[in-house]
Length: 218
Image (cartoon, rainbow, N blue to C red; front, side):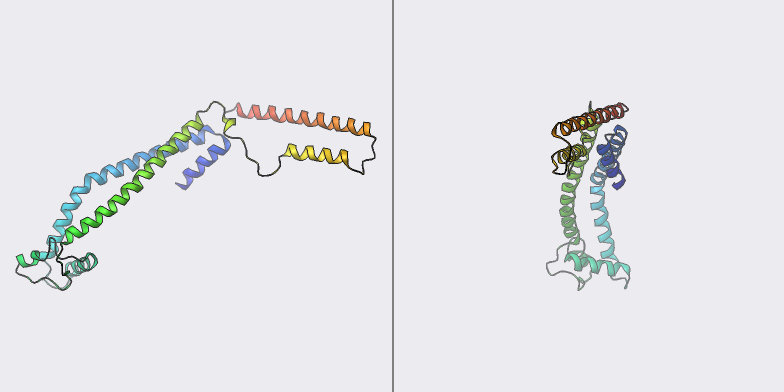
């Protein structure tokens, strides 16, 4: 994800259609993977419910067969979720056994308690899943729009926080002409300023020509 994000940033900064296309392709693959995970979880939702019920019934049946992993696991579940057995205290009475001390007084079933916790977690996961899906779709759309724009110069324009080179040169010329230490006559100062301005315009034209040649490669 970090590498893909860096490639996308480089593509926007440089106006490169190759980087933007690679970024859009990577995000599309990630979108397909996200959709596949969501479909798999929905498909396995009922299976998880059945497997949970079978596992709790197995632990209730083998609880009093001696200290072991089954007894310790069920005790921890009953203490964590404040429940008892699979459906309640009646699960132990069916096998003519007393409910263990770790059972909650209300005798709520662990299956109900665990399923309720999973539903809350699933609701939060659905919200996060929707946000991720929306972000991926927006990222793909933006990358494609920037990649297939007619003029990449429109979105690769630099933003300067400080004065540009042209502004610095103009200010330098103005300071030299208006300086009190300028010993040149007024007419010669104006002629020198015009000459500097002509040279500056020529450099600007050369720079614009090089930029046009650069963008024609894309």
